[in-house]
Length: 344
Image (cartoon, rainbow, N blue to C red; front, side):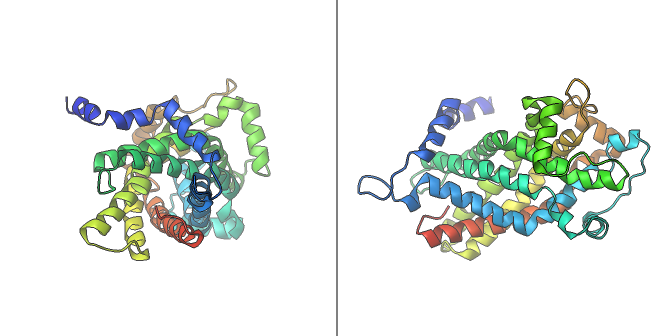
């Protein structure tokens, strides 16, 4: 009953994210004008904001990517695949995992999978920001703010849509991150670089294989973006309106820390399941050999490793998402200020 009332009150919110509406918004990203009296300037165009969003995310990845690698290794260290093959898996925390990678695989391995991550952000970061700002423009009230409910739903929906589009690059990133551990266990290398991973996935599973694990990936993105998009936006405007703070680096920093914590709390379980599904071996039929789907993966993990298994990797995810949000949003705000555009 409560949900029905919310749906009725926010009908325009749900209509905004229909496929036709999404296509309409994305088409505007290539239909802009170069500073004329009739149209917006290039620095205020959707294309500029899209590009700056990608640049901000690249800055954040450069600063925090090793934490993502450590998180992925932690999430697969006790995977059923290893147990079935009789291999003994050591339990390490984030710091020991990072040190082990550095000492046994070399410092450059801390950035293994960075290239497909950059590919991902070309699609993911720009898309989610453009869609969210469009949603905010339509749904904001007279003060320029959205309700907490609309903010959360908009962030979750925009994040999920963007992740669906970027899921192939995320799959390749996970495969590359997990490869170093396989080699240390004495298993033969499966590929030498990013392009070979794309080729391997296509040969094993076809074009649809690139979207293996897409559902938990979208679930993760939805939860993370309630934090990284919605919580940042809401916290920033709350600080500016309730405490009368200026749109400054201090506000950006405080809002980014709130966003990082919320994103880690909500996103870790889905991120754990996504990693397990994407890293599992593929059977002759092109389907995953270990898990039937999201629920089966969660059930096996909890049964074999305990209830808190789905929060494995929470600390590195929080340590990563806090600084990631900080670097990403401060970089975005500063670059937009530099080019003369509006802040987020």
